[in-house]
Image (cartoon, rainbow, N blue to C red; front, side, top):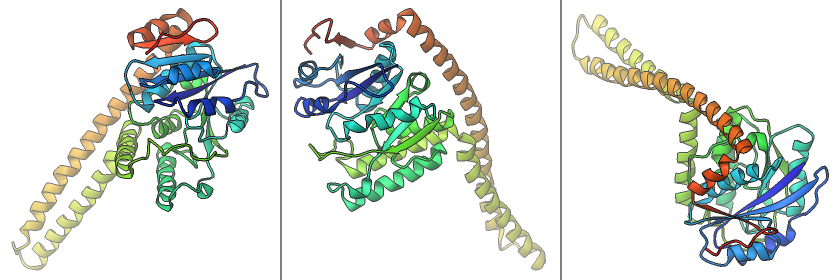
Length: 339
């Protein structure tokens, strides 16, 4: 049983050594623990800091591609390096590394394939009241979207099995945290949360440095995921509401038409009812078409999953990484090229 701890990084030469010093080299129930650093186009000495402080692998993006792509690159690399469990943590040492054992225990017991570390949000001193409420609201929305009991959706401290990693996709470039949970829920990947501890704040959050921007991007991610996985629900519910309004307006017109002996003073209700009916019918048609597209997407995901399995056994994945402009370095075998 092998575990690789991956750390997405962007200009983290100061905080990364602190994070690496806290990471475990042994875990109960595991034969090997290795560390992988994803350098997302850093312009400082992140790569050198990673190698100097014991990273087994370093993957470097030529340009800054964002947290979501760094997470995906790290997962693909961990699968390529034959891991059984992938643990993701942050480079700012936000999460207590001693709790990695808590993350992998449900996987080792066969209870889950995706485990999320749930932070003690209410006791985090450097979080504002508004940020805590925002976290609670976001987690509630994701719980409903994923149909899974997730208490801390934005947490980046999580463990994923190799099998689950091969099935997950991320289309949003901003963050992977919300989208992968919603996706895992709809793919019926067994998922759970475990309470974890956090460390003192080393630097301000880069992901939520701007609350309005974070709200806008996170909302767009959740809405997009809803449309991707529940298109019929997204479109037929408003279509049904509009249809109900259409019937109510039509009934109003007929009531006055018959009770006022052919009165034509309420024809506006009829015109409005027809306009709303057109919108309702349009939404219903879009819902049907989206559902058909969703079925096609599920077929494509199945094909992609089989291709990933084939690539892992054929070495084609290395060629895929090269085409994506990724550079590999393994500390024990070679010195990584400079950025």
